[in-house]
Image (cartoon, rainbow, N blue to C red; front, side):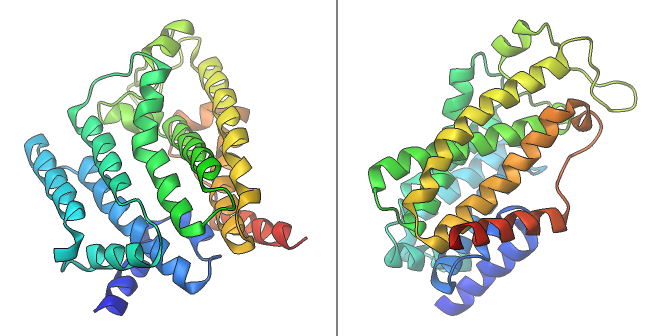
Length: 282
């Protein structure tokens, strides 16, 4: 049953982790299976928040997941079984899944972010939690320092997601850029008749400024890499590298996110992963 449960999670990761899978495949089998279990459960939680269910049903589903994570010993669902077994092998802080649920609940409840500090709290729930879950499987030469770096790296990745998805989020009635930042640049987010973002004068500058701020979080979070063993470091560097390269593309030409969901090609992602692995060998 356990082997089948892990295979289920590995299949989910292969088919749905468009960015993370390039790093996960660099891990040895045991760590790859454990991280796939973490990803599969995190993806399930995210999908509840992003799905088309009524708000009340989303809240009920999130409550069910929270309760199931708190009672993993009784789990029969393959994803939960795999997480339970992974938590037996590695010091996985399963309470971090509760933080992820809190963040997705924030998505479901809606409402703007007034300040960047509010946004950081949200990012720590939905992405810093994932960083700390990954770290528990990677292992680090200094677990306490490593946890802070993993948290920062997760927050950096989430800020990249926010910039990439400004248009898509606005179409879904969500705005993640803090109101303080919008006011600073005189930006009112709106879509034109063609569904593309409209820049009334400050949006390009706001995106570049926000990208520069995100880079400081990458600079802090990537200090984690030297604390990891070679394969874990390569995995971490590959996942972060894909998002960092995406951020650089957005900063170079913010208009790229005005009318599409920007992404790297498969060969570009593979190139980042290969460089992450070979760089650690050097």
